[in-house]
Image (cartoon, rainbow over all chains, first blue to last red; front, side, top):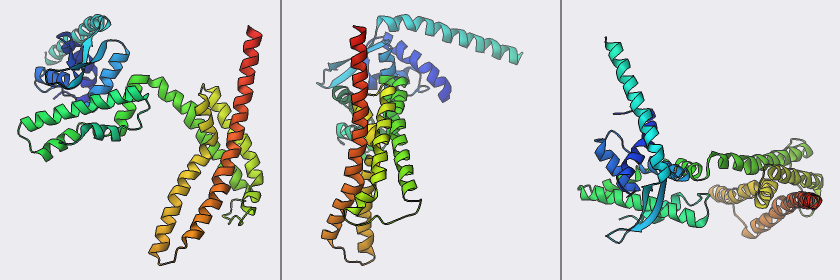
Length: 110
Length: 229
């Protein structure tokens, strides 16, 4: 299980990556992240929405009310052009971090 | 199924956003809880277990409210609120209490009946003009709105009102519990007298001080803008 500190740092990357696949409402977004990470990343409502609102304020994502096929209104989030631009450097940063950690682990095991 | 909309509305009723935005947040969070609850029920959980797990999505509603506010308005908003509202408000409260204690000689004293109750506190009432003015000035200087400045001015009486509202019912319960007869007409007169002496008149003095500062500040701004044009 991944600790809370690392989770905080990866949360934005997770949200942006999942939204890159298409617009989703909050609950579905949390479910999709949990599924795709096989339960390693889990968002409660209390953790998810403040982050979504913060990302919306930064204009990385945009939320709009939509009515689903079941007639229920849900606020769907989609990635904005700014969010797409932000995703690439965040991915790079994390890839670099993972590479560095892998190198470090190899060194310490040598 | 619980009314999630109502539950969220109650738990986040004092979310400091404008009405439409607050309504949106309530609806969105309620929808999330509803979906979560239904997914648990679909998995075969009993209604009670599903409700419990759904409620566990938010352990601390106060903290969630704070985080939503920071996310939507930024950290500066909370800082501004502290400087425009709470610091001037508590300062007026502390100052008015210190003045009163000084006048009463730091001894618990029964303030006389009737008109003497107000007369006795006349020097305190005069000091409240200054205290109210200071609260409004500090709030305005920190960029507070007119409402925030007036709130900071009259904060001591708001605190006193809360104390009164708590004190009288508790007093009644205690009197009843120890078997004393409670004459409601006496209680009503006491509430009226104390309310006038300790809330209305001091509140008026604080408000006058606050309004005076607002008037002076607005005049200064007007004269500056006239000079600048």
